[in-house]
Image (tube, rainbow, N blue to C red):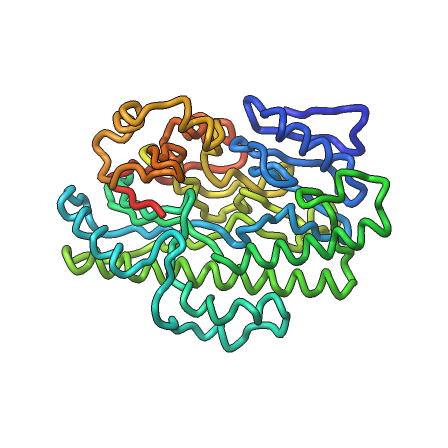
Length: 390
């Protein structure tokens, strides 16, 4: 599907059945941006984000936009296939009990520094150097929100291990610092375009400037940290499973879905920004998770040029966190998790059940997968057996 608006400088191509008003306005702002190239692409999990829709993909001419990558740089997925044919609920509970001891969640960190050779190669950029002390204790931590650890049954007859996490505080600090710098530059050179300025705007850093070079170097370091963070947790995950059942592990996939990269599309080298979108080059393996309690998918990219060789990063929110918790009951959400091992719902600041991550708050993952049949091929469908949330 393609939207063409006379007021837009370039077209918008969408794989969404419906696009919420907020995401539509953000997509229009992107399409009118002078640094955009060719078209704006919206994946089938698209919904309103911060400055740019989550589930959006853009290509920029000689510029990077910090808010088009977002505050969780390098957030992504890791999945491993085991040799197990099955695992019972009691073993799942035992695995999660061990993981809760070894993997801090939410705002919690390790008490001691964690080893990683990447700390020795940290770039000499203030926003990175300022976070190194805390980052040494954040490596191998899950975080909160929609981050999770799951055990799943694949339709390939194997049990799979999966987790979702990112670069922890690195991404947040980098995004805030360089969006602020981009705002300053655009206030001087592009102040007549309101969508550029403001904390949630589309301010950009011109390639070739010191600010752009620093942002790209800091972003790439956050990507490395995020991948190492997932790998460290997956090592704990595999060890916990192997301590109960003799098994082997294979087909480990570790990918991110919030990043920018220099790529060639439609005959030009451009900076592709994927915010809540996964790279899907021809033959490239990827992971598209559903919400907790619903299916996830191991996929193979088809290299579709219209999506800038991208696909969705998940199911995508269908309703805001506060609205969903206000309009749904704990009993309804409990029923949606029937048969899946999980710890129940947390509480919000007012002591009420926080239902914001329940399956019903998200789009139907099966419909999202069907909508991108020209972007990816499904390799394995995964059914959740147990989930541990941040």
